[in-house]
Image (cartoon, rainbow, N blue to C red; front, side):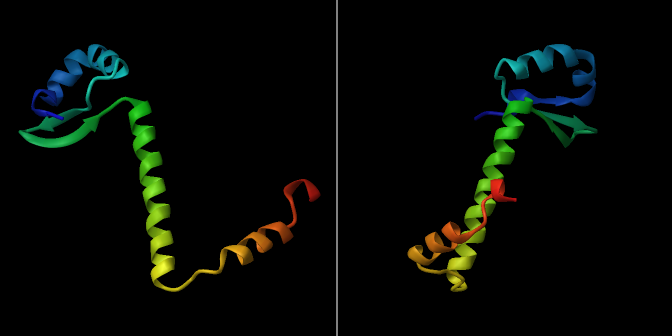
Length: 93
């Protein structure tokens, strides 16, 4: 992935916002916006942003699970299944 062509000053974004948003909607790579020569923001398609957030959430769940494993906070599979079976169901409320 090469971002060098997708680094633009904020003035470029202001002047070309509609075209940039259309490109992003069509699958273009995110755009890095600069201000005074420094990277300040990334503009990306909302679908890509949502996918990234979902991926981060899954990675966090995995990391928490690994932490539980290392700390010994586990129970045997059969016990977990029995606990789930004995839980009151939502429609029973």
